[in-house]
Amino acid sequence: MSLDTTHINHQRMPIADDAELWLFGYGSLIWKAGFPYLERRPAYIEGWARRFWQASHDHRGTPRAPGRVATLIHQPGALCHGMAYRISGEVLGGLDIREKNGYLRETTLMHFADGSHAEGLLYLATEDNAAFLGDAPLDTIARQIATAHGPSGANRDYLLNLAAALEDLGAEDAHVFALAERVRDIKT
Ligand code: SIN
Image 1: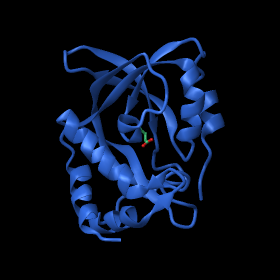
Image 2: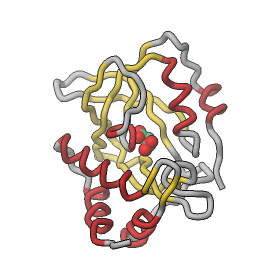
Image 3: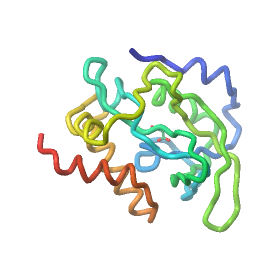
Image 4: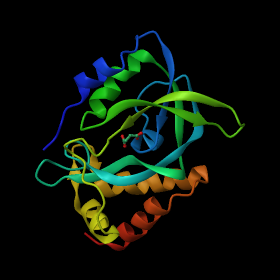
């Protein structure tokens, strides 16, 4: 089951095409922008942890064999490293479609390495959405990721590209790195 959030997002946080804003990416938006941006800077947010708890029926899996992609869960004291993009509001139409499988526009405070901060928009898939899978044993999540494929490609590529991008950023993420290690060991 999936839920198309495209229209909800447009209504809940309308943003003019000519507005300039920051976007915070923590999943595919770190390593696969696929949209024009004015500036790109590593950033982190506080109190959120990245988890492969969201089903992908449209990109990295299918309705019959969904993949698993990243969302964020509240976790006091956690840091989530990602990529901030300064964009024009007109980019959001395409992003709403890309993130339509349960993700909602939210705002967050982003921190940059130089100590400055800014408000950013992010796409968050909460446990209320129809595609939320939640936790499972790491081996179960890894097996699902190792075997799922969708219109955007193999689910394992999503995970391994994300792990590589986080390594490039020098960012720690025990959940992502443990999954990547397991998925590399699964031969399909
Ligand atoms: C994000 O990357 O910020 C959202 C989730 C995704 O598209 O992978």
